[in-house]
Each structure stands twice: as structure tokens, then as C-alpha cells.
Image: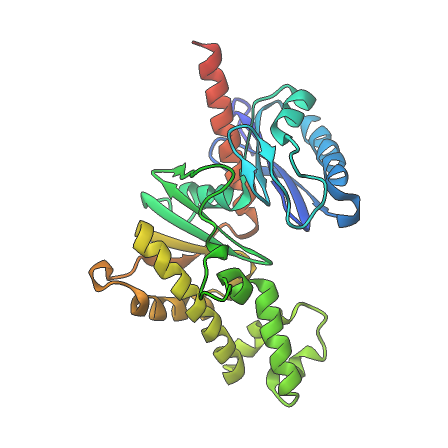
Length: 319
């Protein structure tokens, strides 16, 4: 329970399939949560209506200092203008920061969701004891964020650290095209089609979930086919991460997103394979862990953005 004198912030996660709004304190502790499923047919206006509804509910019992938003797509973090969403139509060139400020009259800060998640893990998660933190999220797409001394690294707008789009060859294969949730689904699906007698094929008969989810029970049974598929994915991830190490050499690499739920089944092959792709002078490789904040990672990061927005606003009115 929050103390009466604690500052309260709203953190918002806007993705392609879900919308989360939370209230929390300056320590990143979540007090309340509202979650919506997104209807792609309703586009950005549908999400905006959900945000209005959720904020109205949260403001009923809370005096909020500021709002932070982690957005699933390229965003100009300085102005708050959205470039686009890869999943939802209608966000192009929409200034979400201005819209929220006019709606609520509160300080607002916005950043890409992977940057926001990186900030959360760097301050409240596995990266809190490190100065240089690299975060990679592996879900339906693949994104990244770099945090240095608990500050998000920003390049030229509208984006940076797009590890999912690192090329694995000159033919256009990227980490995202080979290692995202959709890519792993395809790998498992193709394996089932060509090996109908396999354990993965048997597991698929009673499952309506995405094919990548079949890896969890198969790996628990030490199924050789599942191990082979995951080792191929881990090898591609390791090769991609070698570029990150050569450019930034972070102290820790944190892997989040849906595929990170495989935990050591994914982490240990990456730990094993990454050194093979590194300059020997950079060995040992950075510490590699799976994210600790799981579903809370973007909302908690958004609370941090809100806290910073409140501090900047307070500073501006005192000068």
C-alpha cells in the first residue's frame, strides 16, 4: 500500500495486442493495473478511447503527478510524435504527448517500448547493479534498448538500437526474420509438417497456442528436435549479439519478451555460443540473464519516464 505522501504516477504500455495502464510510486511499485485487449480494426482511435477510459478510472482515487508511455513503434522521444505502429493503423505522425497533455494537463514523457523496458530492468530489475545495460526483447518482433548510468541511450530520432533489424547476411535475413516469435512459430510448423511422427507434432494435436509454445513441454522432456530448433535460434541470436558487444561491450545483456520465458533453455545456449563470435580481447562475454520484471517491464519503465517528466516540470517552474 502506498503511503499518503507518496507521489503517484501513471505508466502506460501501448502495444500491438495489449494496452496496460498502471499507477505506481517513485520506487516503481505498481499499485493498480488496467489491461485492455486491442482491436486492430478500431485502429489508433480505438486505443485512444481505451486510454481515456482507463485514465478516468485511475484518476478517481489518485492524484497523479505525471504520465509516462512506452509505445510499440518508432517515436520521437523529444516531441512525443509517433512515427508509426507496425501493427495498428492510424498512429502515423500523431503527437501522443501533446494529446495527453491537453487531455489531462499533466507532464508527459514518451519513448519506444523497448527503451522503456530497458530502463525498467536497468533500475528495478536484473541490471540495477550495472552501469551499462543492454536489453533485447524477443516477442512477435525483436527490439532493443541501451541504458548507460540509468539513462536511456538515444541516437538520432526517431530510433536507435534496432537489434531486430541487424542483418545476419547480405541477402536480407535479420535477427527478427529468423528469431522472432513468428519466425520460431514457422520453424516449429515446418518441422511438424515434415516430421508428423515427432513429439512436437504429437503435442500440437491438443494445442491452439502459437507453435513456439510447444517448445516448453518438449524441452521439459528433453526432446531432441526441440533442442535442435532452439539451438539454431540461440546461435542466430548469439551472432547478432556479438555485434552489440563489439560496438558497446555492455556489462550485462538482458533478454526479455515471450521467448525469454524459456529461461535457461534459451539463455544457456547463448552463453555457450556467444564467445565463438567475439574478439578474444573482449572475452569473457558480458553477463547474460533473462528479464526479471516479465509483463511489468514496460509499465514499470513508463513509471520511471513519468517520474522524470515530473522532475523536469518541477525544475522548469522553479527557474
